[in-house]
Length: 216
Ligand code: ADP
Ligand code: MG
Image 1 (cartoon, protein in one colour):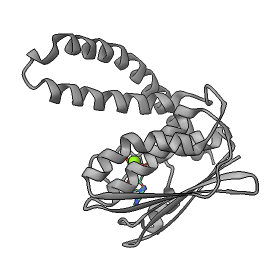
Image 2 (cartoon, rainbow, N blue to C red):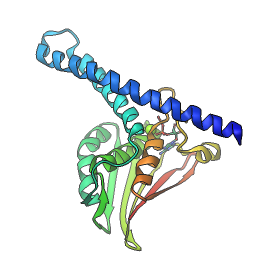
Image 3 (cartoon, rainbow, N blue to C red):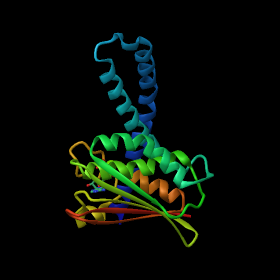
Image 4 (cartoon, protein in one colour):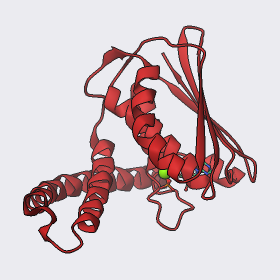
């Protein structure tokens, strides 16, 4: 148990370090982005530099979320509306990659939540689904209300996960992807816990994965 404790301490420390580095990096990043925008299209490879900067911004943002102990702004919101917004951005990019997204909205109950954090949750789950189907496929999203709770289920027909990966899901830095950071589901876990919700995952290698969220 002492070793477990020591490892936990190390993890907490590493987390804090990551968050403070993220904060430090964000300011100069914002300045560089601003300058680049100001320079307009005059710079060679402007769009590429801009999109790489945006990528850095996203990564930094993920690390910063790790440091937030609790959701900042809880309001009554509809998951259907939030999901709609996420799909407006994600849907276009997904369609270009051969993904067909279907949604079945059978139940919509306003939940007390931080809208941006829930957006991030949906996006992280959808990104994983997309990455599990590099040659395209279907993502099914189902919304139900059961026992006065909002259930949202994302089902893909991608690569699936081994039992080993499933057991360790939500651990920081757990990734099977060459360029993954293994933070996506950890962030999902953290946000869902801050909303008193639960997440459950069912997956079978070669068949696909279902991620179900339940939010009070
Ligand atoms: P990352 O996407 O950066 O690898 P995540 O925390 O988002 O980190 O996911 C952790 C791991 O869980 C992934 O590397 C992958 O192995 C597995 N995983 C998550 N979602 C799916 C999915 N929909 N299908 C298959 N594997 C998944
Ligand atoms: Mg991910």
